[in-house]
Length: 377
Ligand code: HEM
Image 1 (cartoon, rainbow, N blue to C red):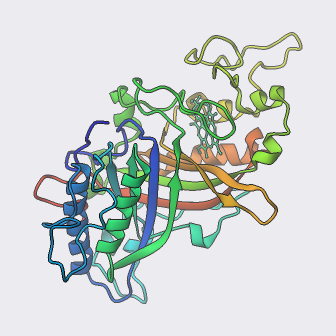
Image 2 (cartoon, protein in one colour):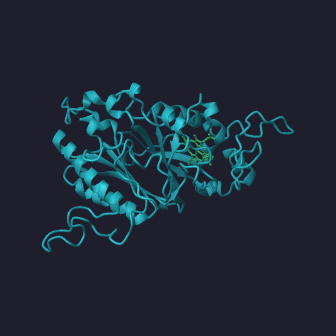
Image 3 (cartoon, protein in one colour):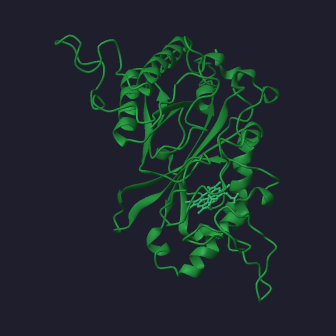
């Protein structure tokens, strides 16, 4: 895997070709922390992220070269591993900007992007507080799970006393492709996922739909993006008892090739007008792909970057499995518009349940010698 530098105009981990593994973490700032604490935390995270994404250990001495009478600076489990395409992407939640009890803890309340507010309640939402929200987030993606976990573990350790983990999520398989050079992977319903995703090579769409533009405001967020995370439980036991014809109708594509049900091969554009012998549309009116497609949403596109998860099983013997949905967009409105459309009408809703939710403003990339989020202060 290629190394992806932490520094640059945009943060990596967005249009970067989606890696195979994820460890995502949401943090809350500790009580009584100050603006200086927050800035120093972001500075410390930046230095550590710069090292780890280059395949280096944390700190001057790493895992085993430091004093014998002190805990090692690096936890050590990535010692013999390459960077494995690691990216570390940092975001700021709406609560970071809140002034609790009238006190503006970090002096940034007036700099909150107007659009950065908690997502509205969508029909069918069954959100769990303990899997939602967060002052800060870190998305760590890599082609080796141990590298991604090492990153979150060490960044959490560095945050000790300043910020603590609120919730975290492991993902074991990518469910998107973000480059035309990648093959399309499959989600846990067995369908190709990411076929009509926004791809890095389509720079015009990336600029108009993914990066916050200077005229959007606030100035500190230009070159950044908004990240939406949704933990979506998939009731795979029900799905697995559903006939193939129905599975394909729900998605709007074939299960093998991933071709639209209107015909062609995987990348043939869907024809939503095409009808069959019974005059019914070949792509069902409630098909997920139809309802999510830009043409049904006034041209709106989002960059999906989610992962499959299986977190053991529930007391009824069903796998706690699903899609940890991640998307990047220039404005939260893009996700909200598409999700409203899906929540109301999508045939897929019979088989999924949204149980976690969070939104973050993702600042632009850090300049070398500076730190991530510096433009906010
Ligand atoms: C497309 C699955 C949730 C937005 C697709 C496709 C599949 C799929 C199989 C077709 C292949 C492709 O173009 O990627 C799922 C599953 C979900 C889920 C299993 C939940 C467990 C969501 C959510 C959103 C979303 C929550 C956004 C709010 C989209 C978009 C497309 C898409 C924008 C592309 C439509 C197009 O342009 O053709 N999804 N999806 N999906 N999905 Fe989902």
